[in-house]
Image (cartoon, rainbow, N blue to C red; front, side):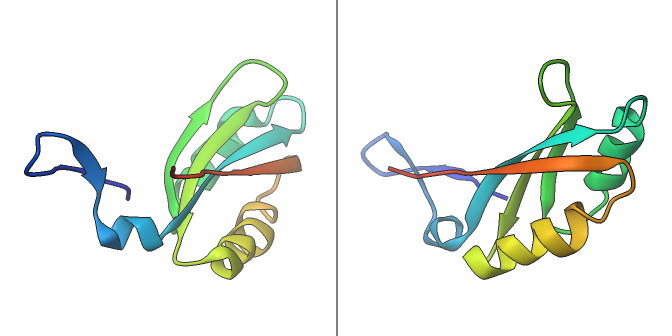
Length: 97
């Protein structure tokens, strides 16, 4: 999970370990009436750090992390997209500037 640390100059920054992790928000559309079940199931997956049932064009939003882009892709394709009730996902990779 991403952590901010206080630096000696009083600012905050990410630890080297956290910068190496690839993080993303996964926007999830579900079958009608399945959003809360999908959110519950996605939240249990390894690599998912947060999962919320929301209102709007997507029913569920998950925040995920993986050691690299390949592992992020495997997490989304092999684990998240196979959850029953999901009809579509959109991956938004987080950019640390």
